[in-house]
Length: 461
Image (tube, rainbow, N blue to C red; front, side):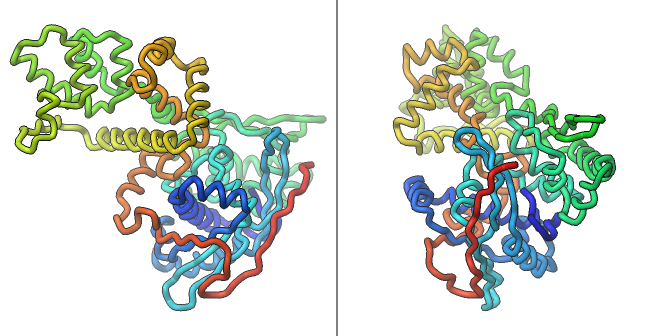
């Protein structure tokens, strides 16, 4: 995505990401039935936030108020071009304003309201087409070129290979129109590579929070002239581990489960279904039960305890106020945060699945059972006992988390983004996230109104 003319500065990029974050949260708070109606009828939604709230997202100082106003004004005034893929895989270059209308409050509240053209809004809210930008990470980049490279490569993080596009497209994606005019002159690609590409690639590599680094792939034509560019994404070690949801970070936990006589398949099922801190809590309680004696089959007894979620008490005693609570074992703060994040992701995936129509749920389940990544044991358990078996449901939700479009909110993108979201003041959460306001059609209530702009599609060259 790049402007036809004018400057798309580093700060403007950050402001647009903040507006997109507010928009996404507001959109997700709307029931799915209303979402479908809005898209089908091409209705226009109006979103709002104060500059103070946008400043918190941007981690900006109070002096940035006018800069935020100016950035929104700049975003409204520019026409952008970006690639879009049709249902049959055909590519289009779409030309449109990103913001079709905006208003600035004149009552001193500092509120900004904005609207998107229907076609642009549908594309921006399509989680299968765009990867969720980590706003926490986006605020860390020192260079606008690095941020632009991150934005335009992160969407390919699951396939780990970007589209192969002409050099002219990549130049326009990463630099301003004035700079692009210079770099696109004959023989100036080497300066673009030296001054823009390589420094941006190095910043992605050196930024610890960035989950990947990029490798430049050049396509040459006659006389070895570079004509097209493509990037291969290399996941960093921690990112690769995070994408393997069945991996345990504590080998002692596995060893303890083996002591109980639990098979390797049983251990994998437990690690897939339950968080490590939960299993440690069960282990501490189960060891006390073992010391009391009377348990013959340790493996079956432990699995039964975990499945029924009680700690040494009978299911009938569970929930009694006078039942002694077992203290949780000491857990490293970072590991506890990671466990909370894993539980958050599991809840989001489950909510997404249960919110789909029944026929969509059946299609997802069938795709999971047909996937080559699904173990035969899981298929056998599904045939015998159905979906509610932990081995089936746990593996299914782990598989769902890796599918495009399931985790679309910014706080789902990384642990740091989740912690920022979790630590927000309670007043900023809930249905009115960041004071988002939604209305369908109609004039703005305050401030000045701008004329709406309609997108137009231009066939790709």
